[in-house]
Image 1 (tube, rainbow, N blue to C red):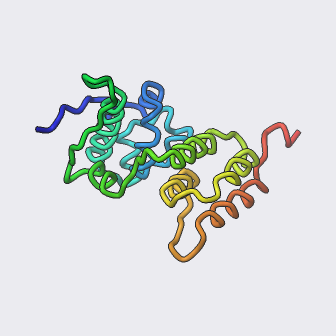
Image 2: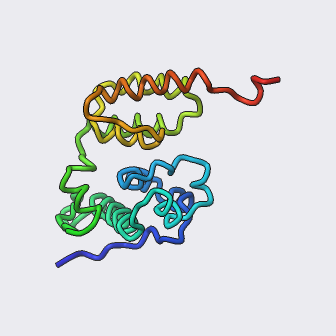
Length: 184
């Protein structure tokens, strides 16, 4: 029997509203391929609009986000013995099933630490700050590196060191970073 999935996200919901209500949805959106969650348009763009821009199926994205947040709630909810529970449900035709099959969302401590560093990286205001954080992320798995690459709108390939590719891009972008006050 499939357990009920709560509705956290809807197609007409602005991305910013979802993230304010459920900050943990950030990772789910990144895992769907939506790197724009940290860009200014996320403040007004709906999930459906962002899916259209990124060529994603809105129903798959909504399904993935709702299942991810429901599963997080289940893991954090105590059962009769007071222990956290986890759902074993599979959703064969959704992004959620593919991500689960690929092992996305591991609870390994090292990966959780890298996820926290990735969130700090995404929240950093300058490329200098991003470089400082990224230098401490050597050894990050491909999922983390891919999420960072998506947020920077760069493409990674299998025939190069993806960490070095991202690092080089950060150094390049830092050279051109400026603030309005610098031009006075």
